Amino acid sequence: MIADLIKQQLTTALKPDSIELIDDSAAHAGHAGAKGGGHYNVTIVAQIFDGKSLLQRHQLIYQALSELMKKDIHALGINALTPSENT
Image (cartoon, rainbow, N blue to C red; front, side, top):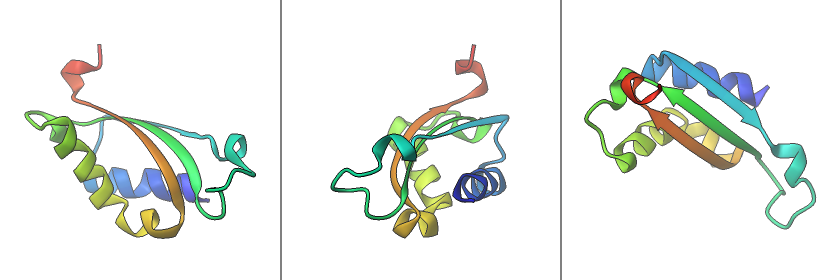
């Protein structure tokens, strides 16, 4: 299952305190861009984001998921927080 792979790869690369992943793929079935890959939203809390800009946080996530982004993930909403921001 792709959702499990996403969590596994993010956990391995970023060592987060928490990950919440929502699979919204079923809600997007049938639209023009839904030919391949799923739609996901992730909220990830990790110390590695401390001192990083929003762009740098997203880049870390995209790097961790690089192979999945090629065909298994069509859309990814990201909420990347440090532990101190997660209050």
